[in-house]
Length: 141
Image 1 (spheres, helix red, strand yellow):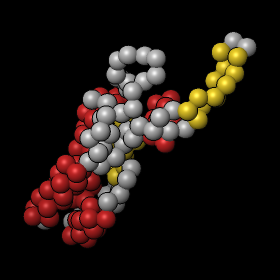
Image 2 (cartoon, helix red, strand yellow):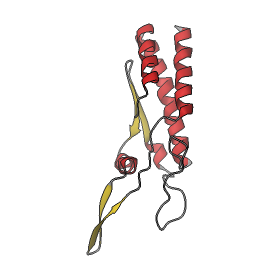
Image 3 (cartoon, one colour):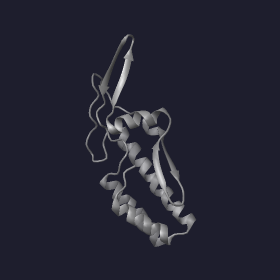
Image 4 (cartoon, one colour):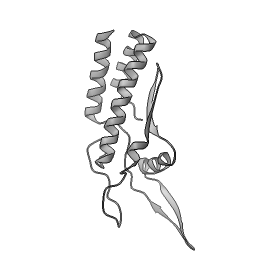
């Protein structure tokens, strides 16, 4: 997951001003929001900056219809992360970074390059909402 300096500074304030239970609660709320936001964006085939994903080659229809269900979160009192698990993590990694894939079709082998499609990331709206969540938890402390 990408990290923004302002969000990191805000999280550090939350971590120092909240009890361990309060920190975990704040992290869970932030990570749950980011998981939901990224799922919606992936389903709409949009990158975090709002641009459309590169279209499929030789196929019609949207990509990543089911991969959003594979986004899991992990939260502790000092950290939070979202990511993919299982086979979906390999597929997501290949698309996130636009990797070169080797294929074998019968007796034919070759390579093809996947277009870079940023699946996980922070949009401007995500940053604002995370900041709002941080402020809310600081006010409750």
